[in-house]
Image (cartoon, rainbow, N blue to C red; front, top):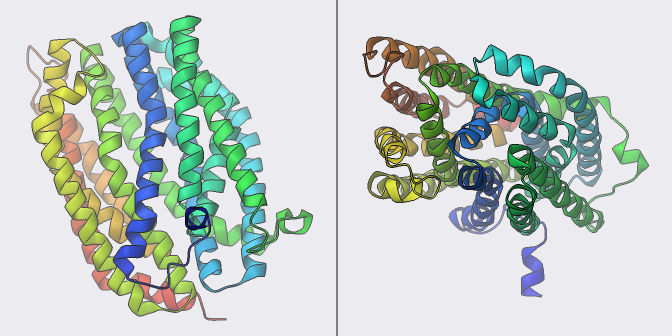
Length: 462
């Protein structure tokens, strides 16, 4: 009975805030790590069986993929906020309509991206100045991803629904199964069938589809909490617009990160294939290093949403302090690991000594910034959970677009040399560090000023 209870919706409006946040965050963290394994397994396997250029191809494709999917990921965030608030308020009808509309929105988004994505793939790669040596691989990777995008969309939306209900364990179990299958299929398609970059893309699509299936199956068994039928999946203008209104700023935030990555990817591409490959390795390790920050941010959003729905505002304030302290402590520990053990992590991806050394020096420069991201994500999660998704969006625009991108290009310009004619690779890492620190400062100011407190109270106003 105790084990079964782990796989159910959880009330985060009772008990010690730090305990509820940790109980939610740990499965969330493991799930995010498993999600990251999709891309990491792709990179490791193509790096070993195909070569460094294939590794660079997979990494160069990611900014475009993330850009086209950003808005939908944001809408999934908005869905989680609406669902957590409705669940905290014990509003069965509102919860049912919210979940039904989430499924309908996921279906619509799938159709759009399946048509638009393949058409934009090659032009966007050429616009970014992707080297001819990896252009074909990048194009095939992205085309397969877009044609098989249904699994990604439905998993993210349905797992967001489960998390909004406080159940982060079920989504974890489904994702771990899919991650293991992804690794097996990577080996079969790449090492066995010799499909190269296209093989790892196909493996990811299949694995994501399976995780989405299990999420849907789990929701169908939760009829004691909400109703899922023809009436609730019918698109409701008010419910859909609330989900979109809360989600679009988060989607814009994701899109901003992706666009900034695309612009800096163009700068990275100009520095040559060695820097491209080094950047791919760093981003793979960075993906894991960021997972605790993202996990705590999502936990704070759900925790805040449920307590706002229940009108327990004192718990929101106490939980925000305790959750941020936990997140900062975790990031400080990760920073120490990255400072002293990075070369061992990078050796997983390649045995090229020059590549490992370059990636290691770049990572040491940016590692301290993870503590700043912990602050940004935790406080941003509180603001989003309270219904204020605008403040985190503006923080992202200022720190990423107005600061990170210009700083990267300016530093590259002034560090150009005979060895690095397009600028020193350190300009990429230093610009990230600066933007992360500024983002933390801005988040702390926005939290203390308290616009999110007004949106929190307005949730209960007629």
